[in-house]
Length: 561
Image (cartoon, rainbow, N blue to C red; front, side, top):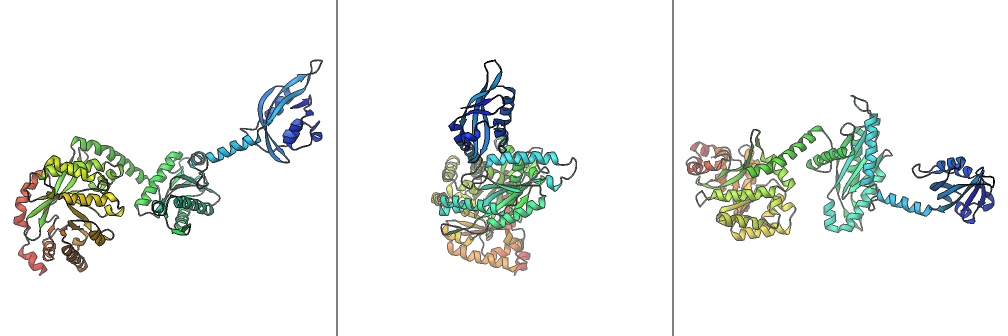
């Protein structure tokens, strides 16, 4: 409880009030309440109501539950005060009487809660909530200070570096999530030690971080990105275990690239995606072409779904020809999509988009069904080969998809060949081997496509059951001018014969290439020498005509003799 006279000096000070203010009662007695308030340190303006409290004392106006901050010898205290004026016996204003509560601990708890709400508990970096607040203010300032119709000055620029750790999942999976958490903490420590005074780091979630740097040009952001990459790729020691990761960085700047934090983050994310596509462990800056490509991806993603439903997609077939007798032994199904009024869409552009969105599953099931149904019109000795995405093949229900299609169409299992690439084995899961074994047990053949262009190709032949390997066209292109290409093919043929694996060579375009491969006892070939991929209605004619023109001419034989 407290009481002042008409001049604002204390007339009555309780012991409790003296304790709270860490000041003897005698010293507070007759002290000026406004003077006490005037001696306080600066307090947050949204919370402290001291000025209003002094004004009400001066005007004799009652107040209720006003929060004030007072600096005492024991530190800052927060008081919540209520008071009202009282009159003397003659009805004149005589002072104020009121009560107060010490709410310091509550304020500290609130401040701590507010701090925790903006901090990431694992790394003690600012979190996504704080990032949005800081980025919003920084983008607004950059937009306001930037000159109109001119290149922004370096001191008005805000650079956002969007970081994604490379290889973090491997650490989590190999040495445990606790080690992964410790690794994130060490990453945060390195960022704090690395960053200049004009930069602030945030953890946005998972293994994603952000750095905001103010008042520096793009060159400074690029230098910071390079320093970050170099610092974070140094080995880590976690409970005696050595761990190595990397980081990819995307950079976007305000106001040049964006003026809103969400847009700035989106464009930095596009640059980050480009960095990862380029091989990881590097940085990329945002450019307008990235936006165009993303819009193109969104457009195709929406269009391809309707295209499949509307019958715009089709399968064309490229013959596989025996190098020994020129007979067609099968055809590879290749996806074709021509957009009405817009022309064809390359599978090289279409497939990655479909894999990224998961729509590749629908395309894969449709292609299996269509290819098996159309192969029924060919001679029974011919096989049909269907390319299957690693995304689809790794699923536990892939074998069921194939079995269902064979059951629906009635195609014999040994006439279907599933083509996969080495990428299937890079993230080996139990489902991959299960699917391989189940398909072969059913009679379906497995072909390993683009052989020789990936990693550890030879080891795959001993670890995983395959019936055929397809030698990539890269070895055939310079077959006549580069002897080492022929040497590689000969070595592959020796291994394949010992493992009883068929060999098909892709990209055969000349009779000389075909004759060289025939002499090395390759089983079959495909390429423009025989035919590009053709619509299904043309395949019966190709099957009949190709044997008459597929065998090498005398000139080709003489050329390689």
